[in-house]
Length: 156
Image: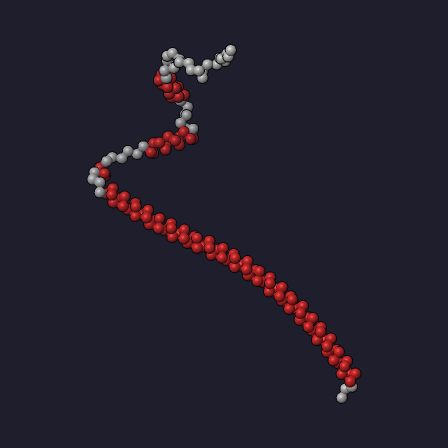
């Protein structure tokens, strides 16, 4: 048997080891708790992001449904209008004159500068015609309005 002193020394040594082990376990427990808190915060952030995306997805699905409903109504309206036009007798017998192509070509030539051309006589003729139609250019008396008078009135 071991002596009482040896037993006390062993007990003291085991107590120190137990205290060291408890300290290490408490440190590990604190580290794990901090890691758990960080993971919980990350989970909450991801959950919020997921909820945002889900809400946005729900809104998009709702918009798609509204668009599909509007498209269906528009298709029905077009079909109904075509049916109504089909019911009009003689509509297909009317000759359609497409002036839009000429207007688009004129606008394009104006935009590109082709409308000016090199023939200045066209421009001169156009200006002469406008002047012929202008009563002021034909020498008719000019009615002067107070806005046209450049004199400054005198006040007494």
